[in-house]
Image (cartoon, rainbow, N blue to C red; front, side, top):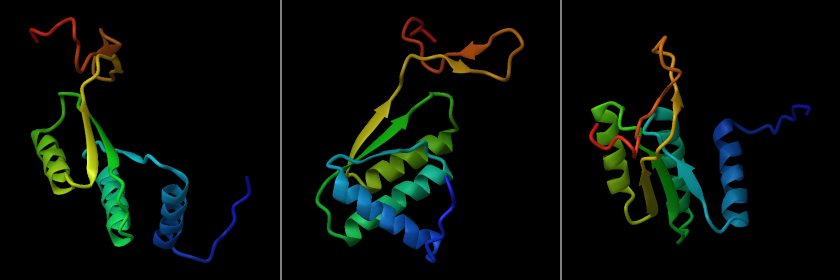
Length: 119
């Protein structure tokens, strides 16, 4: 695919992308880890929604690994509270294996294992 320059800045290009997304889709979801990149994305989506007086709620998906920093969890809670009237929050823990780079003995760790609830 060949690059095509639009003669607009990144923010303007993002606004055009949001125009398309909100025009074409009934349901819009944002994955929100609590990190700076997904936080910026969520804030920009919410700014666009409010600026354009759009009534629909935005689905916000946060996967809790139960192994994140306490301040990250607090930040996620603050953001969910800030946008509570405009979002449909999904805060989930899933039984899944995650590849680990920290152990020579185990290839995977389980951030939430429904078979080991005592942990």
